[in-house]
Length: 251
Image 1 (cartoon, rainbow, N blue to C red):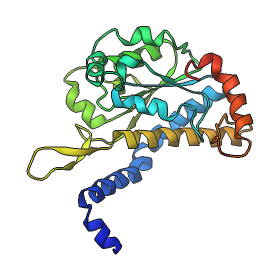
Image 2: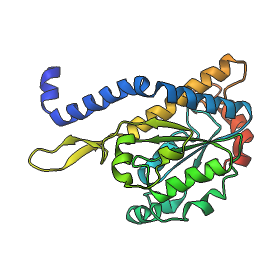
Image 3: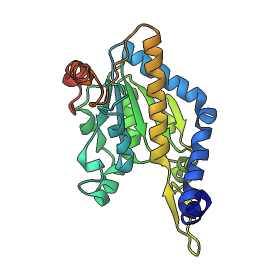
Image 4: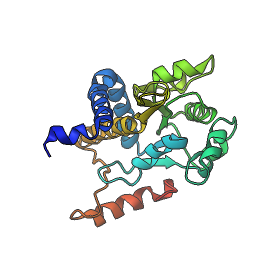
């Protein structure tokens, strides 16, 4: 089959990927200043031997795992993971918990975040209690708070509530529409094809890449994990795990 014939069999998939690619292409233009500011914060944390904590609820927690112990990623990344706010052992219940005031504070007691650290909050809607309170806690501890969120979605659903974007020191806009999905299903009001995870991961990895190159260029070795199958990876990764294990309960 020709390329045109292959694509004709998957028009919806093609439309989704084209939409996603177009949005990805605009990220640096629309978030250039915020990406630079976020990279500054990560660079400062690395030079101060601080950490970058990443927190999200529901599917947003995936980004915390994306940067944890990641080949090509920074070893100072620490995921904040709590089963009650994730989707693998009770997805419906996690929606209840993420909206419940007071849930996140005891979770954050397990993570000794301070003024040398960065806290990245991933929240597409940007208004649920757990993420808002996590951002407030990060600010109270003196950490630099970075939000990855949808400005349009959070403004639409806030209805007077405080948004993560109102609290964070740096705000990256993933450009997601309300409801996240971008492809209409003909003959219905349904929309499919969510984009916030893909775009959020791209933004976070872009920030880490920028910070890593800056660190290396300044003479401060970037703490970067190697893929386990690359030459010398075992030795490099073992040293990094030994360096951070006492402060990262998930290593």
